[in-house]
Image (cartoon, rainbow, N blue to C red):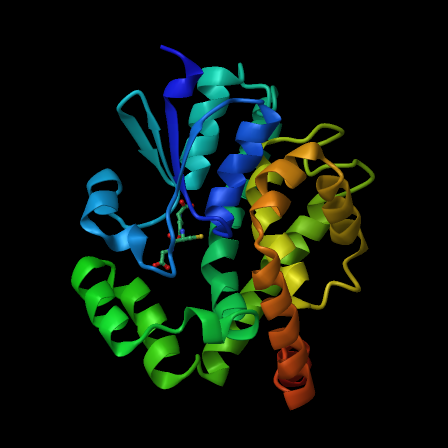
Length: 272
Ligand SMILES: N[C@@H](CCC(=O)N[C@@H](CS)C(=O)NCC(=O)O)C(=O)O
Protein backbone atom coordinates (compact mmCIF):
# COMPACT_ATOMS: atom_id res chain seq x y z
CA UNK A 1 0.00 0.00 0.00
CA UNK A 2 1.36 3.42 -0.87
CA UNK A 3 1.12 6.57 1.21
CA UNK A 4 -0.88 8.04 -1.68
CA UNK A 5 -3.73 5.96 -0.30
CA UNK A 6 -4.04 8.44 2.55
CA UNK A 7 -7.18 10.51 2.17
CA UNK A 8 -7.69 13.47 4.46
CA UNK A 9 -11.12 15.06 4.90
CA UNK A 10 -10.47 18.44 6.43
CA UNK A 11 -11.49 22.05 6.78
CA UNK A 12 -9.28 24.89 5.54
CA UNK A 13 -9.31 26.78 8.84
CA UNK A 14 -10.52 24.04 11.17
CA UNK A 15 -8.02 23.93 14.03
CA UNK A 16 -8.42 20.17 14.48
CA UNK A 17 -7.61 19.75 10.78
CA UNK A 18 -4.58 22.03 11.12
CA UNK A 19 -3.13 19.65 13.72
CA UNK A 20 -3.20 16.76 11.31
CA UNK A 21 -1.93 18.76 8.34
CA UNK A 22 0.98 19.96 10.51
CA UNK A 23 2.06 16.39 11.16
CA UNK A 24 1.58 15.35 7.53
CA UNK A 25 3.86 18.25 6.57
CA UNK A 26 6.42 17.40 9.25
CA UNK A 27 6.48 13.80 8.03
CA UNK A 28 6.49 14.96 4.42
CA UNK A 29 3.69 12.49 3.72
CA UNK A 30 1.74 12.87 0.49
CA UNK A 31 -2.02 12.58 0.81
CA UNK A 32 -5.16 13.12 -1.21
CA UNK A 33 -6.92 16.21 0.04
CA UNK A 34 -10.71 16.43 0.36
CA UNK A 35 -11.56 19.93 1.52
CA UNK A 36 -14.95 20.01 3.23
CA UNK A 37 -16.65 23.41 3.42
CA UNK A 38 -18.15 23.89 6.88
CA UNK A 39 -19.89 27.12 5.88
CA UNK A 40 -21.80 25.14 3.29
CA UNK A 41 -22.44 22.47 5.96
CA UNK A 42 -20.74 19.82 3.83
CA UNK A 43 -19.51 18.22 7.07
CA UNK A 44 -23.06 17.13 7.90
CA UNK A 45 -24.17 16.01 4.46
CA UNK A 46 -24.92 12.32 3.95
CA UNK A 47 -21.69 11.71 2.02
CA UNK A 48 -19.45 12.97 4.81
CA UNK A 49 -21.57 11.44 7.59
CA UNK A 50 -20.96 8.08 5.92
CA UNK A 51 -17.23 8.67 6.53
CA UNK A 52 -17.48 10.25 9.98
CA UNK A 53 -20.93 9.82 11.56
CA UNK A 54 -19.97 12.43 14.19
CA UNK A 55 -20.03 15.12 11.49
CA UNK A 56 -16.70 16.51 12.68
CA UNK A 57 -13.54 17.38 10.81
CA UNK A 58 -10.99 15.96 10.25
CA UNK A 59 -11.18 12.29 9.24
CA UNK A 60 -8.39 10.21 7.80
CA UNK A 61 -9.00 7.28 5.49
CA UNK A 62 -5.93 5.10 5.13
CA UNK A 63 -6.74 2.43 2.58
CA UNK A 64 -10.29 2.05 3.96
CA UNK A 65 -9.18 2.25 7.59
CA UNK A 66 -10.96 5.36 8.84
CA UNK A 67 -9.51 7.22 11.82
CA UNK A 68 -11.33 10.16 13.42
CA UNK A 69 -10.42 12.49 16.31
CA UNK A 70 -7.42 14.64 15.44
CA UNK A 71 -5.24 13.48 18.36
CA UNK A 72 -5.94 9.84 17.48
CA UNK A 73 -4.98 10.60 13.88
CA UNK A 74 -1.70 12.17 15.04
CA UNK A 75 -0.77 9.07 16.99
CA UNK A 76 -1.89 6.76 14.19
CA UNK A 77 0.19 8.58 11.58
CA UNK A 78 3.27 8.85 13.76
CA UNK A 79 3.05 5.16 14.76
CA UNK A 80 2.41 3.98 11.22
CA UNK A 81 4.57 6.27 9.10
CA UNK A 82 6.79 8.25 11.47
CA UNK A 83 8.44 5.48 13.48
CA UNK A 84 7.15 7.34 16.59
CA UNK A 85 9.53 10.17 15.74
CA UNK A 86 7.21 12.75 17.28
CA UNK A 87 6.59 10.85 20.53
CA UNK A 88 8.95 10.97 23.50
CA UNK A 89 10.90 7.88 24.51
CA UNK A 90 10.68 8.02 28.32
CA UNK A 91 7.47 6.97 30.13
CA UNK A 92 7.44 10.27 32.08
CA UNK A 93 7.57 12.39 28.94
CA UNK A 94 5.10 10.15 27.18
CA UNK A 95 2.67 10.67 30.05
CA UNK A 96 3.32 14.43 29.90
CA UNK A 97 2.59 14.36 26.19
CA UNK A 98 -0.72 12.55 26.75
CA UNK A 99 -1.73 15.13 29.35
CA UNK A 100 -0.86 18.00 27.00
CA UNK A 101 -2.80 16.45 24.12
CA UNK A 102 -5.85 16.04 26.35
CA UNK A 103 -5.45 19.69 27.32
CA UNK A 104 -5.32 20.60 23.63
CA UNK A 105 -8.62 18.86 23.14
CA UNK A 106 -10.14 20.66 26.15
CA UNK A 107 -8.76 23.96 24.89
CA UNK A 108 -10.51 23.40 21.58
CA UNK A 109 -13.80 22.91 23.43
CA UNK A 110 -13.51 26.15 25.42
CA UNK A 111 -11.74 28.45 22.98
CA UNK A 112 -14.27 27.89 20.21
CA UNK A 113 -16.84 29.90 22.21
CA UNK A 114 -14.40 32.79 22.14
CA UNK A 115 -13.43 32.72 18.52
CA UNK A 116 -16.93 32.12 17.22
CA UNK A 117 -17.97 35.16 19.26
CA UNK A 118 -15.01 37.51 18.83
CA UNK A 119 -13.34 36.51 15.59
CA UNK A 120 -15.92 35.55 13.03
CA UNK A 121 -19.45 35.65 14.38
CA UNK A 122 -21.17 37.30 11.39
CA UNK A 123 -19.61 34.72 9.10
CA UNK A 124 -20.59 31.59 11.00
CA UNK A 125 -24.11 32.38 12.11
CA UNK A 126 -26.51 30.00 10.38
CA UNK A 127 -29.73 30.98 8.63
CA UNK A 128 -32.96 29.43 9.92
CA UNK A 129 -32.91 26.97 7.05
CA UNK A 130 -29.28 25.99 7.68
CA UNK A 131 -29.97 25.58 11.39
CA UNK A 132 -32.93 23.30 10.69
CA UNK A 133 -30.83 21.20 8.32
CA UNK A 134 -27.95 21.06 10.83
CA UNK A 135 -30.28 19.98 13.63
CA UNK A 136 -31.65 17.21 11.45
CA UNK A 137 -28.19 15.87 10.58
CA UNK A 138 -26.13 16.44 13.76
CA UNK A 139 -26.93 14.09 16.65
CA UNK A 140 -24.72 15.85 19.20
CA UNK A 141 -27.17 18.04 21.15
CA UNK A 142 -24.42 20.10 22.80
CA UNK A 143 -22.97 21.00 19.42
CA UNK A 144 -26.42 21.84 18.09
CA UNK A 145 -26.98 24.14 21.08
CA UNK A 146 -23.57 25.75 20.52
CA UNK A 147 -24.58 26.78 16.99
CA UNK A 148 -28.20 27.50 17.86
CA UNK A 149 -27.24 29.95 20.61
CA UNK A 150 -24.99 31.86 18.24
CA UNK A 151 -27.39 31.79 15.33
CA UNK A 152 -30.71 32.36 17.09
CA UNK A 153 -29.78 34.36 20.19
CA UNK A 154 -27.11 36.39 18.45
CA UNK A 155 -24.28 35.25 20.69
CA UNK A 156 -23.28 33.59 23.93
CA UNK A 157 -24.19 35.20 27.20
CA UNK A 158 -21.66 36.91 29.44
CA UNK A 159 -21.46 34.03 31.94
CA UNK A 160 -20.76 31.49 29.20
CA UNK A 161 -18.02 33.65 27.71
CA UNK A 162 -16.44 34.39 31.10
CA UNK A 163 -16.49 30.73 31.98
CA UNK A 164 -14.86 29.81 28.64
CA UNK A 165 -12.27 32.56 29.15
CA UNK A 166 -11.38 31.33 32.65
CA UNK A 167 -11.05 27.74 31.47
CA UNK A 168 -8.77 28.86 28.65
CA UNK A 169 -6.66 30.80 31.16
CA UNK A 170 -6.21 27.72 33.35
CA UNK A 171 -4.95 25.72 30.35
CA UNK A 172 -2.64 28.52 29.20
CA UNK A 173 -1.16 28.65 32.73
CA UNK A 174 -0.24 24.96 32.42
CA UNK A 175 1.24 25.47 28.95
CA UNK A 176 3.24 28.51 30.09
CA UNK A 177 4.62 26.50 33.05
CA UNK A 178 5.44 23.54 30.84
CA UNK A 179 7.49 25.71 28.49
CA UNK A 180 10.81 26.29 30.22
CA UNK A 181 14.18 27.08 28.72
CA UNK A 182 13.58 24.53 25.97
CA UNK A 183 12.35 25.56 22.56
CA UNK A 184 9.34 23.23 22.52
CA UNK A 185 6.94 21.77 25.07
CA UNK A 186 8.85 18.58 25.77
CA UNK A 187 12.41 19.61 24.98
CA UNK A 188 14.46 20.73 22.02
CA UNK A 189 12.44 18.88 19.38
CA UNK A 190 8.92 19.43 18.19
CA UNK A 191 6.56 16.64 19.33
CA UNK A 192 2.89 15.73 18.89
CA UNK A 193 2.02 17.85 21.94
CA UNK A 194 3.28 20.97 20.11
CA UNK A 195 1.38 20.12 16.94
CA UNK A 196 -1.77 19.40 18.93
CA UNK A 197 -1.72 22.59 21.01
CA UNK A 198 -0.46 25.04 18.40
CA UNK A 199 -3.60 25.58 16.27
CA UNK A 200 -5.91 26.74 19.07
CA UNK A 201 -3.31 28.95 20.74
CA UNK A 202 -2.41 30.43 17.36
CA UNK A 203 -6.12 31.08 16.77
CA UNK A 204 -6.31 32.87 20.15
CA UNK A 205 -3.38 35.02 19.13
CA UNK A 206 -5.06 35.90 15.85
CA UNK A 207 -8.14 36.89 17.82
CA UNK A 208 -6.17 39.40 19.89
CA UNK A 209 -6.41 37.27 23.04
CA UNK A 210 -4.26 38.88 25.76
CA UNK A 211 -1.00 36.95 25.65
CA UNK A 212 1.32 39.86 26.57
CA UNK A 213 2.21 38.37 29.96
CA UNK A 214 2.79 34.92 28.54
CA UNK A 215 6.32 35.34 27.28
CA UNK A 216 7.12 31.65 26.89
CA UNK A 217 3.97 30.97 24.93
CA UNK A 218 4.73 33.89 22.61
CA UNK A 219 8.30 32.65 22.09
CA UNK A 220 6.99 29.14 21.37
CA UNK A 221 4.39 30.46 18.90
CA UNK A 222 7.18 32.28 17.04
CA UNK A 223 9.30 29.12 16.94
CA UNK A 224 6.37 27.09 15.62
CA UNK A 225 5.60 29.71 12.98
CA UNK A 226 9.17 29.55 11.70
CA UNK A 227 8.75 25.88 10.76
CA UNK A 228 7.98 25.04 7.18
CA UNK A 229 5.05 22.91 8.33
CA UNK A 230 3.26 26.07 9.51
CA UNK A 231 3.47 27.54 6.01
CA UNK A 232 2.37 24.33 4.31
CA UNK A 233 -0.34 23.26 6.74
CA UNK A 234 -1.73 26.48 8.19
CA UNK A 235 -0.77 29.71 6.40
CA UNK A 236 -1.37 28.42 2.90
CA UNK A 237 -4.89 27.37 3.83
CA UNK A 238 -5.93 30.73 5.29
CA UNK A 239 -7.87 32.66 2.65
CA UNK A 240 -6.70 36.28 2.50
CA UNK A 241 -10.32 37.45 2.35
CA UNK A 242 -11.04 35.67 5.62
CA UNK A 243 -8.00 37.19 7.31
CA UNK A 244 -9.11 40.65 6.21
CA UNK A 245 -12.62 39.96 7.46
CA UNK A 246 -11.34 38.76 10.85
CA UNK A 247 -9.02 41.74 11.27
CA UNK A 248 -11.87 44.14 10.44
CA UNK A 249 -14.31 42.38 12.77
CA UNK A 250 -11.75 42.48 15.58
CA UNK A 251 -11.34 46.19 15.07
CA UNK A 252 -15.12 46.70 15.00
CA UNK A 253 -15.50 44.84 18.32
CA UNK A 254 -12.64 46.84 19.78
CA UNK A 255 -14.23 50.17 18.83
CA UNK A 256 -17.57 48.91 20.19
CA UNK A 257 -15.89 48.09 23.51
CA UNK A 258 -16.86 44.45 23.20
CA UNK A 259 -13.61 42.71 22.18
CA UNK A 260 -11.89 39.78 23.83
CA UNK A 261 -9.66 42.26 25.72
CA UNK A 262 -12.74 43.89 27.21
CA UNK A 263 -14.02 40.48 28.31
CA UNK A 264 -10.59 39.76 29.83
CA UNK A 265 -10.76 42.99 31.81
CA UNK A 266 -14.21 42.10 33.14
CA UNK A 267 -12.98 38.60 34.02
CA UNK A 268 -10.12 39.92 36.12
CA UNK A 269 -12.34 42.50 37.82
CA UNK A 270 -14.69 39.71 38.88
CA UNK A 271 -11.88 37.45 40.04
CA UNK A 272 -10.55 40.10 42.41
N1 LIG B 1 -12.35 16.21 19.16
C1 LIG B 1 -12.48 16.41 17.74
C2 LIG B 1 -13.03 17.78 17.48
C3 LIG B 1 -13.25 18.01 16.03
C4 LIG B 1 -14.05 19.29 15.78
O1 LIG B 1 -14.79 19.77 16.65
N2 LIG B 1 -13.87 19.81 14.60
C5 LIG B 1 -14.60 21.02 14.23
C6 LIG B 1 -13.78 21.83 13.27
S1 LIG B 1 -12.31 22.43 14.06
C7 LIG B 1 -15.88 20.60 13.56
O2 LIG B 1 -15.89 19.73 12.73
N3 LIG B 1 -16.99 21.23 13.96
C8 LIG B 1 -18.26 20.95 13.38
C9 LIG B 1 -19.31 21.91 13.76
O3 LIG B 1 -19.04 22.84 14.53
O4 LIG B 1 -20.40 21.74 13.25
C10 LIG B 1 -11.12 16.26 17.07
O5 LIG B 1 -10.13 16.64 17.68
O6 LIG B 1 -11.05 15.76 15.95
